[in-house]
Length: 319
Image 1 (cartoon, rainbow, N blue to C red):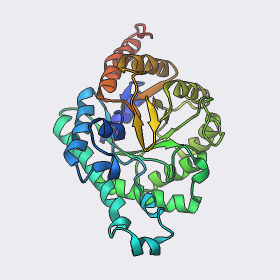
Image 2: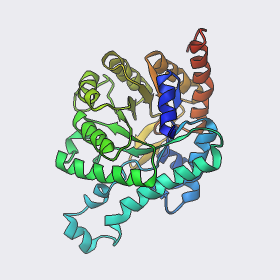
Image 3: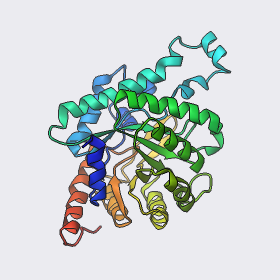
Image 4: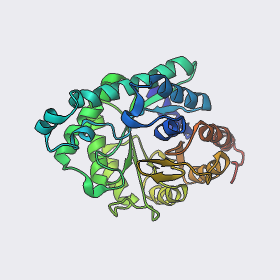
């Protein structure tokens, strides 16, 4: 059985599967800038974060590749000719190199720490433009080319699945999901929602489920919103979609260009929110911006015990 096959078997058995927590904000917490994702400049730091999440109990590591695409570099310039005229000489190939390095670091962390455990590597991919602004999205023709390039690199580098995350529209979710399938990788799609549980386009979770179900996503999740917004969105998703579901919220506040850490959701309170997600049917749980290995360890300790109790006929732990 493949590594992802083992994860899928656990979902089919209605078991909890644990994602890791934040990578980018954890870099900031460890006194580094998140410029260039640091996968080449500080590989030991990035590998160490992955290792800490494995030790906390994560079953799935996400690569440090959020919004890492050739598009992200090229759209700073008038066009590709302008890029070649004034840009750094490696900009056309930098994304491929960073994506490859990021997958390698996650795999190395697994090899070093996950002895005797099945830990999958999820290639993290998000919207080509800013994830809270669907109005900025490029054409579907551009999306198809860019996503196919990203997914192909992830597959060649050895990712076990794609986590298409913080997606803000049904259209971009469909394109990304199709690209993952084209390169032969299973794909989890995770949407960002507002306080009403809707996408930032105004589309509903029912719209999303209706559009994606024919394309056979492995799971649909919600992420990168405050815990209360994720709860609302998950409630709507549960009404419309009966496949595997998941949730991983952010905690703190966005303080452009970086992140503001707050004490609103220490691990015990984050666990209390996650228990609500389990009650709504979520079986893939983890953390987004601001969360730490301590948050994941709290979920592992609290949710797995509750899940085991439920499957054995006992009463689940409540908030």
